[in-house]
Length: 307
Image 1 (tube, helix red, strand yellow):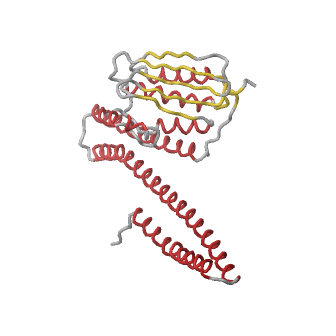
Image 2 (spheres, rainbow, N blue to C red; image 1 turned 30 degrees about the vertical axis):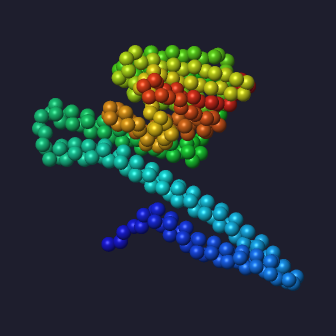
Image 3 (tube, rainbow, N blue to C red; image 1 turned 60 degrees about the vertical axis):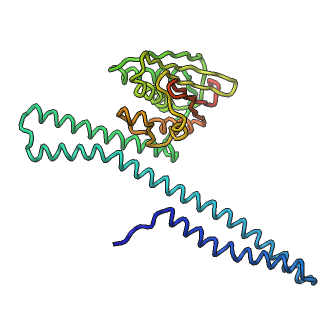
């Protein structure tokens, strides 16, 4: 049986090989060049010494750049491995449930028609859950690789926020929540209506899901406008996000401990998609939150004229 060498061990070996093949001879050549410059008295010794030092300087520069690219490659490989591991973990739960329901129906363990119907409904729900996860993974992959074609046009900020509010209202019918919007009129950005409304809708849904236990939960949307920039702020008075978790909140499949403990449904892709959309619009997104005091998401987009 063959065992795969861990990536960190392979990286260490590659770095040692790189060090032995380049750095050691280079240091020896540097020492020789310095000796020839100091001790040698002839023009040939001086010329050879200068050439050796120039050569070693170039080699050291190449070594530095090579080491940097090597580390970046290893980091990218780790990200890929983490991504595959996270996707596999997220798919395992619905796949296990689907297999269990199929085996139950196949072995005729349930004979009551009502129970069979209930089992089929649960099976359908798990299939939809898996399909939704796969679609979100494909979507964020397209965003982050720049393969998501966008038609950028001048769009009024109030227009895509209104679209997001309509979408959120339909999604939150089971537990309505107050949303207060203060949006300046006649403010434009260059963007895609459906994409920007999706980003705002994801932020609204996040606040709604994780603020389920908050009494009198309120979500606010407001705009801050300058000559060159439009800032959108989506804030809530929910549980907030602990400081230790804020650095990774926009990463794929990252879910806070509170979400895990409360068993709130989610894939950990919502905020990653928001970040990808904002970056595709040449914007920036940041988080300001204190645990127990709600959260504020700030989206900054370049402002443009109506036409």
